[in-house]
Length: 317
Length: 276
Image (cartoon, rainbow over all chains, first blue to last red; front, side):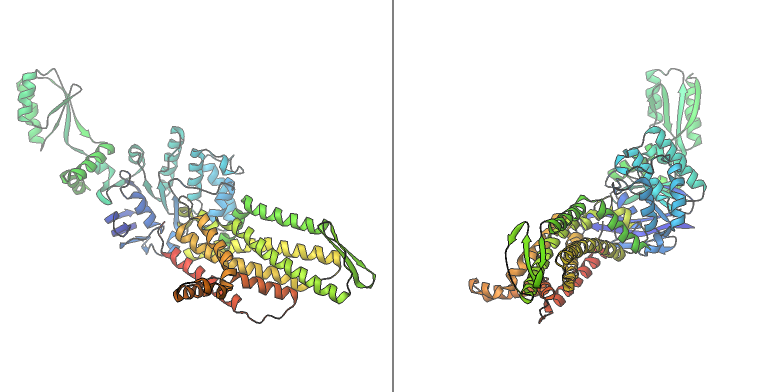
Protein backbone atom coordinates (compact mmCIF):
# COMPACT_ATOMS: atom_id res chain seq x y z
CA UNK A 1 0.00 0.00 0.00
CA UNK A 2 1.26 3.48 -0.86
CA UNK A 3 1.42 5.63 2.24
CA UNK A 4 2.49 8.75 0.32
CA UNK A 5 1.12 9.55 -3.10
CA UNK A 6 1.86 12.72 -5.01
CA UNK A 7 0.24 13.36 -8.36
CA UNK A 8 1.52 16.08 -10.71
CA UNK A 9 2.26 18.49 -7.88
CA UNK A 10 3.17 22.01 -8.96
CA UNK A 11 4.23 24.78 -6.64
CA UNK A 12 4.97 28.28 -7.86
CA UNK A 13 6.09 31.22 -5.76
CA UNK A 14 6.07 34.94 -6.58
CA UNK A 15 3.19 34.57 -9.02
CA UNK A 16 4.91 31.91 -11.07
CA UNK A 17 8.37 33.51 -11.18
CA UNK A 18 9.82 30.73 -9.03
CA UNK A 19 8.83 27.20 -9.99
CA UNK A 20 9.72 25.20 -6.90
CA UNK A 21 7.89 22.03 -7.91
CA UNK A 22 7.28 21.15 -11.50
CA UNK A 23 4.87 18.29 -12.14
CA UNK A 24 6.17 16.09 -9.34
CA UNK A 25 4.71 12.62 -8.91
CA UNK A 26 5.97 10.03 -6.49
CA UNK A 27 4.79 7.27 -4.24
CA UNK A 28 6.22 5.71 -1.10
CA UNK A 29 5.15 2.29 0.07
CA UNK A 30 4.22 1.48 3.66
CA UNK A 31 7.10 0.30 5.83
CA UNK A 32 9.85 1.49 3.52
CA UNK A 33 12.65 3.99 4.06
CA UNK A 34 12.59 6.56 1.28
CA UNK A 35 15.30 9.13 0.58
CA UNK A 36 14.70 12.39 -1.23
CA UNK A 37 17.93 13.69 -2.70
CA UNK A 38 18.89 16.74 -4.66
CA UNK A 39 21.09 19.80 -4.70
CA UNK A 40 20.16 22.95 -2.78
CA UNK A 41 17.09 24.59 -4.23
CA UNK A 42 15.94 21.40 -5.95
CA UNK A 43 12.54 21.59 -4.24
CA UNK A 44 12.99 18.86 -1.61
CA UNK A 45 11.92 20.92 1.39
CA UNK A 46 9.05 22.45 -0.60
CA UNK A 47 7.78 18.95 -1.33
CA UNK A 48 8.02 17.89 2.33
CA UNK A 49 6.35 21.11 3.50
CA UNK A 50 3.57 20.58 0.99
CA UNK A 51 2.97 17.04 2.26
CA UNK A 52 2.80 18.34 5.84
CA UNK A 53 0.35 21.14 5.08
CA UNK A 54 2.89 23.89 5.77
CA UNK A 55 2.42 25.21 2.25
CA UNK A 56 -0.17 24.52 -0.41
CA UNK A 57 0.28 23.13 -3.93
CA UNK A 58 -0.47 25.47 -6.82
CA UNK A 59 -1.92 22.48 -8.63
CA UNK A 60 -1.86 18.71 -8.43
CA UNK A 61 -2.74 16.57 -5.47
CA UNK A 62 -1.17 14.57 -2.68
CA UNK A 63 -2.47 11.96 -0.28
CA UNK A 64 -1.11 10.53 2.95
CA UNK A 65 -2.57 7.25 4.24
CA UNK A 66 -5.02 7.53 1.35
CA UNK A 67 -6.41 10.81 2.73
CA UNK A 68 -6.04 14.26 1.14
CA UNK A 69 -3.25 16.29 2.78
CA UNK A 70 -5.65 19.19 3.35
CA UNK A 71 -7.20 17.34 6.32
CA UNK A 72 -5.36 18.19 9.58
CA UNK A 73 -6.34 14.79 11.03
CA UNK A 74 -4.11 13.09 8.45
CA UNK A 75 -1.14 14.38 10.49
CA UNK A 76 -2.26 12.42 13.59
CA UNK A 77 0.08 9.57 12.66
CA UNK A 78 2.96 11.68 11.38
CA UNK A 79 6.20 12.65 13.07
CA UNK A 80 8.33 15.45 11.67
CA UNK A 81 11.87 16.54 12.30
CA UNK A 82 12.37 19.76 10.35
CA UNK A 83 15.73 21.15 9.30
CA UNK A 84 16.91 24.05 11.50
CA UNK A 85 14.05 23.59 13.93
CA UNK A 86 13.63 26.11 16.71
CA UNK A 87 12.01 24.77 19.83
CA UNK A 88 11.21 27.44 22.44
CA UNK A 89 14.43 27.84 24.39
CA UNK A 90 12.68 28.65 27.65
CA UNK A 91 11.40 25.08 27.88
CA UNK A 92 13.16 22.04 29.33
CA UNK A 93 13.60 18.87 27.30
CA UNK A 94 10.70 17.16 29.10
CA UNK A 95 8.46 20.19 28.56
CA UNK A 96 9.20 20.30 24.83
CA UNK A 97 8.11 16.67 24.54
CA UNK A 98 5.03 17.35 26.64
CA UNK A 99 3.87 20.43 24.68
CA UNK A 100 4.40 18.94 21.25
CA UNK A 101 2.77 15.73 22.48
CA UNK A 102 -0.25 17.81 23.47
CA UNK A 103 -0.40 19.36 20.01
CA UNK A 104 -0.57 15.84 18.60
CA UNK A 105 -3.33 14.93 21.08
CA UNK A 106 -1.22 12.41 23.00
CA UNK A 107 -3.02 11.72 26.32
CA UNK A 108 -1.36 13.08 29.46
CA UNK A 109 -0.55 9.67 30.98
CA UNK A 110 1.03 8.50 27.76
CA UNK A 111 3.06 11.71 27.48
CA UNK A 112 4.44 11.19 30.97
CA UNK A 113 5.30 7.61 30.16
CA UNK A 114 6.80 8.24 26.74
CA UNK A 115 8.89 11.36 27.48
CA UNK A 116 11.58 9.60 29.57
CA UNK A 117 11.50 6.54 27.28
CA UNK A 118 12.13 8.65 24.20
CA UNK A 119 14.83 10.71 25.84
CA UNK A 120 16.54 7.45 26.73
CA UNK A 121 16.10 6.18 23.19
CA UNK A 122 17.96 9.20 21.78
CA UNK A 123 20.59 9.11 24.54
CA UNK A 124 19.32 12.20 26.36
CA UNK A 125 17.90 10.66 29.53
CA UNK A 126 19.97 12.89 31.81
CA UNK A 127 18.98 16.11 30.04
CA UNK A 128 15.19 16.11 30.37
CA UNK A 129 15.20 18.59 33.25
CA UNK A 130 17.64 20.99 31.61
CA UNK A 131 16.51 24.03 29.65
CA UNK A 132 17.12 23.41 25.98
CA UNK A 133 18.99 26.67 25.53
CA UNK A 134 21.89 24.81 27.13
CA UNK A 135 21.77 22.03 24.53
CA UNK A 136 24.35 21.66 21.77
CA UNK A 137 23.24 21.41 18.15
CA UNK A 138 23.61 17.64 18.20
CA UNK A 139 21.51 17.41 21.37
CA UNK A 140 18.83 19.58 19.79
CA UNK A 141 18.76 17.22 16.85
CA UNK A 142 18.32 14.22 19.15
CA UNK A 143 15.57 16.03 21.03
CA UNK A 144 13.90 16.85 17.70
CA UNK A 145 13.94 13.18 16.85
CA UNK A 146 12.37 12.32 20.22
CA UNK A 147 9.65 14.95 19.62
CA UNK A 148 8.98 13.49 16.18
CA UNK A 149 8.39 10.11 17.83
CA UNK A 150 6.21 11.41 20.67
CA UNK A 151 2.90 10.47 19.02
CA UNK A 152 4.23 7.03 17.98
CA UNK A 153 3.91 7.94 14.30
CA UNK A 154 3.44 5.51 11.45
CA UNK A 155 5.13 7.90 9.04
CA UNK A 156 8.26 9.89 9.89
CA UNK A 157 9.57 12.84 7.91
CA UNK A 158 13.21 13.52 8.75
CA UNK A 159 14.83 16.58 7.21
CA UNK A 160 18.62 16.29 7.54
CA UNK A 161 18.31 14.07 10.65
CA UNK A 162 22.04 13.89 11.36
CA UNK A 163 22.75 17.57 10.80
CA UNK A 164 25.18 18.80 13.47
CA UNK A 165 25.55 15.37 15.04
CA UNK A 166 29.01 13.87 15.61
CA UNK A 167 30.00 10.60 13.85
CA UNK A 168 29.08 8.42 16.83
CA UNK A 169 25.75 10.19 17.15
CA UNK A 170 25.17 9.76 13.42
CA UNK A 171 25.65 6.03 13.73
CA UNK A 172 23.24 5.95 16.69
CA UNK A 173 20.64 7.87 14.71
CA UNK A 174 21.12 5.56 11.72
CA UNK A 175 20.66 2.57 14.02
CA UNK A 176 17.55 4.16 15.47
CA UNK A 177 16.12 4.74 11.99
CA UNK A 178 16.81 1.09 11.15
CA UNK A 179 15.09 0.08 14.39
CA UNK A 180 12.05 2.21 13.56
CA UNK A 181 11.97 0.73 10.08
CA UNK A 182 12.04 -2.77 11.53
CA UNK A 183 9.01 -1.78 13.62
CA UNK A 184 7.14 -1.21 10.35
CA UNK A 185 7.28 2.59 10.34
CA UNK A 186 7.63 4.40 7.04
CA UNK A 187 10.58 6.78 6.97
CA UNK A 188 10.93 9.69 4.56
CA UNK A 189 14.43 11.19 4.71
CA UNK A 190 15.42 14.43 3.09
CA UNK A 191 19.20 14.62 3.11
CA UNK A 192 22.33 15.82 1.40
CA UNK A 193 24.37 12.99 2.89
CA UNK A 194 24.19 10.43 0.12
CA UNK A 195 26.29 7.83 1.93
CA UNK A 196 23.90 7.89 4.88
CA UNK A 197 20.84 7.67 2.70
CA UNK A 198 22.45 4.70 0.95
CA UNK A 199 22.94 2.99 4.30
CA UNK A 200 19.41 3.56 5.55
CA UNK A 201 16.99 3.83 2.63
CA UNK A 202 15.44 1.22 0.37
CA UNK A 203 14.51 3.63 -2.40
CA UNK A 204 15.23 7.19 -3.40
CA UNK A 205 14.11 9.97 -5.66
CA UNK A 206 16.56 12.52 -7.02
CA UNK A 207 15.20 15.99 -7.57
CA UNK A 208 16.64 18.81 -9.59
CA UNK A 209 15.10 22.18 -10.46
CA UNK A 210 11.72 21.17 -9.08
CA UNK A 211 11.50 17.91 -10.98
CA UNK A 212 12.04 14.31 -10.01
CA UNK A 213 14.64 13.12 -12.47
CA UNK A 214 15.24 9.65 -11.08
CA UNK A 215 13.22 7.44 -8.80
CA UNK A 216 13.76 3.86 -7.82
CA UNK A 217 15.18 1.29 -5.43
CA UNK A 218 18.75 1.92 -4.32
CA UNK A 219 19.88 -1.56 -5.31
CA UNK A 220 18.55 -0.92 -8.80
CA UNK A 221 20.12 2.53 -9.08
CA UNK A 222 23.47 1.20 -7.99
CA UNK A 223 23.04 -2.12 -9.81
CA UNK A 224 25.93 -3.81 -11.57
CA UNK A 225 25.58 -2.60 -15.12
CA UNK A 226 27.79 -3.51 -18.02
CA UNK A 227 30.80 -1.75 -16.60
CA UNK A 228 33.73 -3.94 -15.59
CA UNK A 229 37.04 -3.34 -13.89
CA UNK A 230 39.96 -5.40 -15.14
CA UNK A 231 43.39 -5.86 -13.62
CA UNK A 232 46.02 -6.96 -16.12
CA UNK A 233 49.74 -7.26 -16.60
CA UNK A 234 51.44 -4.17 -18.01
CA UNK A 235 49.99 -3.00 -21.33
CA UNK A 236 52.34 -1.33 -23.77
CA UNK A 237 51.16 2.07 -24.92
CA UNK A 238 50.82 0.91 -28.52
CA UNK A 239 48.61 -1.96 -27.38
CA UNK A 240 46.52 0.38 -25.24
CA UNK A 241 45.98 2.65 -28.24
CA UNK A 242 44.86 -0.34 -30.30
CA UNK A 243 42.50 -1.46 -27.54
CA UNK A 244 41.11 2.02 -27.11
CA UNK A 245 40.55 2.17 -30.85
CA UNK A 246 38.41 -0.95 -30.70
CA UNK A 247 36.72 -0.42 -27.31
CA UNK A 248 35.95 3.29 -27.12
CA UNK A 249 34.72 3.25 -23.51
CA UNK A 250 37.99 1.76 -22.24
CA UNK A 251 39.73 3.86 -19.61
CA UNK A 252 42.91 3.29 -17.68
CA UNK A 253 42.63 4.35 -14.05
CA UNK A 254 45.15 3.53 -11.32
CA UNK A 255 46.58 0.56 -13.24
CA UNK A 256 43.06 -0.76 -13.78
CA UNK A 257 41.15 -0.90 -16.97
CA UNK A 258 37.53 0.12 -16.84
CA UNK A 259 35.24 -0.66 -19.70
CA UNK A 260 31.55 -0.42 -20.43
CA UNK A 261 30.34 -2.97 -22.92
CA UNK A 262 27.07 -3.55 -24.67
CA UNK A 263 26.79 -7.23 -23.74
CA UNK A 264 28.77 -10.27 -22.61
CA UNK A 265 29.88 -11.07 -26.18
CA UNK A 266 31.68 -7.73 -26.35
CA UNK A 267 33.27 -8.41 -22.97
CA UNK A 268 34.49 -11.81 -24.18
CA UNK A 269 35.88 -10.18 -27.29
CA UNK A 270 37.92 -7.85 -25.10
CA UNK A 271 39.22 -10.77 -23.03
CA UNK A 272 40.10 -12.71 -26.21
CA UNK A 273 41.88 -9.65 -27.54
CA UNK A 274 43.95 -9.27 -24.34
CA UNK A 275 44.92 -12.99 -24.39
CA UNK A 276 45.77 -12.86 -28.06
CA UNK A 277 48.19 -9.99 -27.31
CA UNK A 278 49.76 -11.97 -24.46
CA UNK A 279 48.34 -9.61 -21.84
CA UNK A 280 47.64 -11.49 -18.64
CA UNK A 281 44.19 -11.00 -17.12
CA UNK A 282 44.57 -11.04 -13.32
CA UNK A 283 41.06 -10.08 -12.20
CA UNK A 284 37.75 -9.03 -13.63
CA UNK A 285 35.05 -7.44 -11.47
CA UNK A 286 31.65 -6.01 -12.34
CA UNK A 287 31.56 -2.44 -11.14
CA UNK A 288 28.68 -1.33 -8.83
CA UNK A 289 28.03 2.39 -8.74
CA UNK A 290 27.72 4.19 -5.45
CA UNK A 291 24.62 6.24 -4.86
CA UNK A 292 26.82 9.29 -5.08
CA UNK A 293 27.95 8.34 -8.59
CA UNK A 294 24.36 7.71 -9.60
CA UNK A 295 23.37 11.06 -8.11
CA UNK A 296 26.01 13.01 -9.99
CA UNK A 297 25.29 11.17 -13.22
CA UNK A 298 21.61 12.01 -12.89
CA UNK A 299 22.22 15.66 -12.03
CA UNK A 300 24.76 16.08 -14.83
CA UNK A 301 22.44 14.31 -17.23
CA UNK A 302 19.64 16.67 -16.29
CA UNK A 303 21.89 19.71 -16.60
CA UNK A 304 23.15 18.75 -20.05
CA UNK A 305 19.72 17.69 -21.20
CA UNK A 306 21.01 14.17 -21.81
CA UNK A 307 18.29 12.05 -20.36
CA UNK A 308 19.68 8.76 -21.60
CA UNK A 309 21.53 8.18 -18.34
CA UNK A 310 18.44 8.97 -16.31
CA UNK A 311 16.24 6.97 -18.63
CA UNK A 312 18.44 3.98 -17.97
CA UNK A 313 17.81 4.28 -14.25
CA UNK A 314 14.12 4.82 -14.64
CA UNK A 315 13.81 1.74 -16.78
CA UNK A 316 15.62 -0.31 -14.19
CA UNK A 317 13.35 1.02 -11.47
CA UNK B 1 -7.48 19.54 23.93
CA UNK B 2 -5.18 20.85 21.16
CA UNK B 3 -6.84 24.29 21.28
CA UNK B 4 -6.45 24.44 25.07
CA UNK B 5 -2.84 23.31 24.67
CA UNK B 6 -2.19 26.20 22.30
CA UNK B 7 -3.59 28.66 24.86
CA UNK B 8 -1.54 27.06 27.65
CA UNK B 9 1.57 27.13 25.45
CA UNK B 10 1.06 30.84 24.73
CA UNK B 11 0.64 31.56 28.43
CA UNK B 12 3.78 29.58 29.23
CA UNK B 13 5.75 31.37 26.53
CA UNK B 14 4.48 34.76 27.65
CA UNK B 15 5.37 34.07 31.25
CA UNK B 16 8.88 33.16 30.18
CA UNK B 17 9.29 36.49 28.44
CA UNK B 18 10.79 39.33 30.43
CA UNK B 19 8.29 41.82 28.97
CA UNK B 20 5.44 40.21 30.89
CA UNK B 21 7.56 40.14 34.01
CA UNK B 22 8.13 43.86 33.40
CA UNK B 23 4.36 44.41 33.14
CA UNK B 24 3.88 42.56 36.43
CA UNK B 25 6.70 44.47 38.18
CA UNK B 26 5.41 47.88 37.00
CA UNK B 27 1.91 46.98 38.20
CA UNK B 28 3.32 45.91 41.55
CA UNK B 29 5.22 49.20 41.84
CA UNK B 30 1.95 51.05 41.17
CA UNK B 31 0.32 49.00 43.93
CA UNK B 32 3.15 49.79 46.33
CA UNK B 33 2.89 53.48 45.51
CA UNK B 34 -0.81 53.44 46.29
CA UNK B 35 -0.16 51.41 49.39
CA UNK B 36 2.47 53.69 50.86
CA UNK B 37 2.34 57.05 49.09
CA UNK B 38 -1.40 57.56 49.29
CA UNK B 39 -2.26 58.66 52.82
CA UNK B 40 -5.96 58.87 53.52
CA UNK B 41 -7.52 59.40 56.96
CA UNK B 42 -11.23 59.46 57.58
CA UNK B 43 -11.84 62.27 60.07
CA UNK B 44 -14.97 62.68 62.14
CA UNK B 45 -18.03 64.03 60.27
CA UNK B 46 -16.98 62.53 56.94
CA UNK B 47 -14.13 64.98 56.42
CA UNK B 48 -10.92 63.69 55.03
CA UNK B 49 -7.47 64.74 54.20
CA UNK B 50 -5.82 63.18 51.29
CA UNK B 51 -2.13 62.92 50.61
CA UNK B 52 -1.09 61.79 47.24
CA UNK B 53 2.43 60.61 46.72
CA UNK B 54 3.42 62.03 50.11
CA UNK B 55 2.23 65.54 49.30
CA UNK B 56 -0.47 66.98 51.60
CA UNK B 57 -3.52 68.31 49.88
CA UNK B 58 -5.39 70.15 52.65
CA UNK B 59 -9.05 70.16 51.79
CA UNK B 60 -12.10 70.31 53.95
CA UNK B 61 -15.25 69.17 52.24
CA UNK B 62 -18.51 67.55 53.19
CA UNK B 63 -19.15 63.88 52.52
CA UNK B 64 -21.19 64.42 49.33
CA UNK B 65 -18.54 66.60 47.72
CA UNK B 66 -15.90 64.18 48.94
CA UNK B 67 -17.70 61.34 47.16
CA UNK B 68 -17.96 63.29 43.90
CA UNK B 69 -14.29 64.15 44.07
CA UNK B 70 -13.48 60.55 44.94
CA UNK B 71 -15.41 59.26 41.93
CA UNK B 72 -13.61 61.72 39.67
CA UNK B 73 -10.27 60.61 41.04
CA UNK B 74 -11.22 56.98 40.52
CA UNK B 75 -12.46 57.56 36.97
CA UNK B 76 -9.31 59.52 36.12
CA UNK B 77 -7.29 56.69 37.54
CA UNK B 78 -9.22 54.19 35.41
CA UNK B 79 -8.47 56.18 32.23
CA UNK B 80 -4.82 56.40 33.27
CA UNK B 81 -4.73 52.64 33.76
CA UNK B 82 -6.42 52.11 30.40
CA UNK B 83 -3.73 54.12 28.62
CA UNK B 84 -0.82 52.74 30.64
CA UNK B 85 -2.14 49.20 30.71
CA UNK B 86 -2.76 49.11 26.96
CA UNK B 87 0.67 50.59 26.27
CA UNK B 88 2.36 47.88 28.37
CA UNK B 89 0.15 45.12 27.00
CA UNK B 90 0.96 46.03 23.38
CA UNK B 91 4.63 45.98 24.22
CA UNK B 92 4.37 42.65 26.02
CA UNK B 93 2.42 40.85 23.29
CA UNK B 94 3.80 42.46 20.13
CA UNK B 95 6.10 39.57 19.30
CA UNK B 96 3.76 36.66 20.12
CA UNK B 97 2.30 36.08 16.67
CA UNK B 98 5.38 37.00 14.57
CA UNK B 99 7.57 34.80 16.80
CA UNK B 100 5.31 31.81 16.29
CA UNK B 101 5.50 32.33 12.53
CA UNK B 102 9.29 32.42 12.38
CA UNK B 103 11.03 29.86 10.21
CA UNK B 104 11.84 26.78 12.24
CA UNK B 105 9.03 27.43 14.74
CA UNK B 106 6.02 27.61 12.48
CA UNK B 107 6.86 24.27 10.78
CA UNK B 108 6.79 22.53 14.14
CA UNK B 109 3.27 23.72 14.87
CA UNK B 110 1.71 23.57 11.41
CA UNK B 111 2.87 19.98 10.95
CA UNK B 112 0.73 18.95 13.95
CA UNK B 113 -2.85 17.77 13.48
CA UNK B 114 -4.36 21.09 14.57
CA UNK B 115 -6.55 23.15 12.25
CA UNK B 116 -4.84 26.45 11.47
CA UNK B 117 -7.72 28.56 12.77
CA UNK B 118 -7.33 26.86 16.17
CA UNK B 119 -3.60 27.62 16.22
CA UNK B 120 -4.16 31.33 15.62
CA UNK B 121 -7.22 31.63 17.80
CA UNK B 122 -5.42 29.75 20.59
CA UNK B 123 -2.54 32.20 20.30
CA UNK B 124 -4.96 35.12 20.36
CA UNK B 125 -6.91 33.84 23.36
CA UNK B 126 -3.69 33.03 25.24
CA UNK B 127 -2.37 36.57 24.75
CA UNK B 128 -5.67 38.22 25.69
CA UNK B 129 -6.00 35.87 28.68
CA UNK B 130 -2.59 36.79 30.00
CA UNK B 131 -3.19 40.51 29.53
CA UNK B 132 -6.51 40.05 31.33
CA UNK B 133 -4.72 38.45 34.29
CA UNK B 134 -2.27 41.37 34.44
CA UNK B 135 -4.98 44.01 33.98
CA UNK B 136 -7.21 42.49 36.66
CA UNK B 137 -4.20 42.23 38.96
CA UNK B 138 -3.67 45.94 38.35
CA UNK B 139 -7.27 47.14 38.66
CA UNK B 140 -8.34 44.85 41.49
CA UNK B 141 -5.12 45.61 43.37
CA UNK B 142 -5.50 49.39 43.04
CA UNK B 143 -9.20 49.17 43.92
CA UNK B 144 -8.51 46.99 46.95
CA UNK B 145 -5.74 49.24 48.30
CA UNK B 146 -7.76 52.43 47.84
CA UNK B 147 -10.92 50.87 49.24
CA UNK B 148 -9.14 49.53 52.30
CA UNK B 149 -7.37 52.80 52.95
CA UNK B 150 -10.33 55.10 52.40
CA UNK B 151 -13.02 52.75 53.58
CA UNK B 152 -15.16 53.38 50.50
CA UNK B 153 -15.82 50.41 48.22
CA UNK B 154 -16.38 51.89 44.80
CA UNK B 155 -17.46 48.79 42.84
CA UNK B 156 -17.88 50.43 39.39
CA UNK B 157 -14.13 50.92 39.33
CA UNK B 158 -13.74 47.18 38.70
CA UNK B 159 -15.57 47.55 35.38
CA UNK B 160 -12.61 49.53 34.10
CA UNK B 161 -10.66 46.25 33.98
CA UNK B 162 -13.23 44.81 31.59
CA UNK B 163 -13.05 47.83 29.27
CA UNK B 164 -9.23 47.75 29.29
CA UNK B 165 -9.23 44.05 28.35
CA UNK B 166 -11.89 44.61 25.67
CA UNK B 167 -9.89 47.50 24.23
CA UNK B 168 -6.74 45.39 24.20
CA UNK B 169 -8.58 42.46 22.61
CA UNK B 170 -9.64 44.75 19.76
CA UNK B 171 -6.14 46.16 19.30
CA UNK B 172 -4.58 42.69 19.51
CA UNK B 173 -6.87 41.54 16.69
CA UNK B 174 -5.25 44.24 14.52
CA UNK B 175 -1.80 43.19 15.77
CA UNK B 176 -2.62 39.56 14.93
CA UNK B 177 -3.67 40.52 11.42
CA UNK B 178 -0.49 42.55 10.87
CA UNK B 179 1.55 39.78 12.52
CA UNK B 180 0.20 37.17 10.11
CA UNK B 181 0.52 39.30 6.98
CA UNK B 182 3.79 41.14 7.66
CA UNK B 183 5.35 38.80 10.29
CA UNK B 184 7.08 41.68 12.06
CA UNK B 185 6.72 42.53 15.76
CA UNK B 186 7.65 46.18 15.32
CA UNK B 187 5.07 46.80 12.61
CA UNK B 188 2.41 45.00 14.69
CA UNK B 189 3.06 47.24 17.67
CA UNK B 190 3.21 50.36 15.51
CA UNK B 191 -0.21 49.53 14.06
CA UNK B 192 -1.73 49.34 17.56
CA UNK B 193 -0.02 52.52 18.71
CA UNK B 194 -1.14 54.25 15.49
CA UNK B 195 -4.75 53.47 16.43
CA UNK B 196 -4.20 54.68 20.00
CA UNK B 197 -2.53 57.88 18.79
CA UNK B 198 -4.96 58.78 16.01
CA UNK B 199 -8.14 57.88 17.84
CA UNK B 200 -8.34 61.21 19.78
CA UNK B 201 -7.44 63.15 16.63
CA UNK B 202 -10.09 61.38 14.59
CA UNK B 203 -12.64 61.95 17.35
CA UNK B 204 -12.09 65.69 16.86
CA UNK B 205 -11.85 65.49 13.08
CA UNK B 206 -14.51 68.18 12.60
CA UNK B 207 -11.95 70.66 13.95
CA UNK B 208 -9.40 69.41 11.41
CA UNK B 209 -11.74 69.78 8.42
CA UNK B 210 -10.92 73.50 8.17
CA UNK B 211 -7.29 72.61 7.54
CA UNK B 212 -8.10 70.30 4.65
CA UNK B 213 -8.02 71.59 1.08
CA UNK B 214 -10.33 69.06 -0.54
CA UNK B 215 -13.56 67.42 0.51
CA UNK B 216 -12.07 64.02 -0.31
CA UNK B 217 -9.70 64.31 2.68
CA UNK B 218 -12.68 64.79 4.95
CA UNK B 219 -14.25 61.65 3.57
CA UNK B 220 -10.98 59.85 4.03
CA UNK B 221 -10.80 60.92 7.68
CA UNK B 222 -14.41 59.87 8.18
CA UNK B 223 -13.64 56.53 6.56
CA UNK B 224 -10.65 55.90 8.83
CA UNK B 225 -12.69 56.97 11.84
CA UNK B 226 -15.30 54.33 11.10
CA UNK B 227 -12.77 51.66 10.13
CA UNK B 228 -10.52 51.64 13.18
CA UNK B 229 -11.38 51.09 16.86
CA UNK B 230 -12.47 54.22 18.71
CA UNK B 231 -10.15 53.73 21.66
CA UNK B 232 -10.32 57.36 22.79
CA UNK B 233 -14.07 57.12 23.19
CA UNK B 234 -13.67 53.78 24.97
CA UNK B 235 -11.62 55.74 27.50
CA UNK B 236 -14.55 58.09 27.91
CA UNK B 237 -16.91 55.15 28.41
CA UNK B 238 -14.53 53.84 31.09
CA UNK B 239 -14.52 57.21 32.80
CA UNK B 240 -18.31 57.41 32.73
CA UNK B 241 -18.77 53.86 34.04
CA UNK B 242 -16.42 54.50 36.96
CA UNK B 243 -17.82 57.96 37.67
CA UNK B 244 -21.33 56.53 37.64
CA UNK B 245 -22.40 58.82 34.79
CA UNK B 246 -24.92 57.54 32.21
CA UNK B 247 -23.55 56.31 28.91
CA UNK B 248 -25.46 57.91 26.09
CA UNK B 249 -23.60 56.37 23.17
CA UNK B 250 -22.48 52.75 23.01
CA UNK B 251 -21.46 52.98 19.35
CA UNK B 252 -17.70 53.35 20.09
CA UNK B 253 -17.75 50.01 21.93
CA UNK B 254 -19.93 48.27 19.34
CA UNK B 255 -17.87 49.59 16.42
CA UNK B 256 -14.58 48.72 18.10
CA UNK B 257 -15.72 45.17 18.84
CA UNK B 258 -16.95 44.73 15.25
CA UNK B 259 -13.65 46.06 13.87
CA UNK B 260 -11.79 43.68 16.19
CA UNK B 261 -13.88 40.70 15.05
CA UNK B 262 -13.32 41.78 11.44
CA UNK B 263 -9.54 41.97 11.79
CA UNK B 264 -9.36 38.66 13.67
CA UNK B 265 -11.49 36.95 11.02
CA UNK B 266 -9.31 38.42 8.28
CA UNK B 267 -6.18 37.24 10.13
CA UNK B 268 -7.58 33.71 10.37
CA UNK B 269 -8.58 33.75 6.71
CA UNK B 270 -5.09 34.85 5.63
CA UNK B 271 -3.43 32.35 7.99
CA UNK B 272 -5.56 29.50 6.61
CA UNK B 273 -4.23 30.09 3.10
CA UNK B 274 -0.70 31.29 3.73
CA UNK B 275 2.42 29.35 2.75
CA UNK B 276 5.20 29.10 5.33
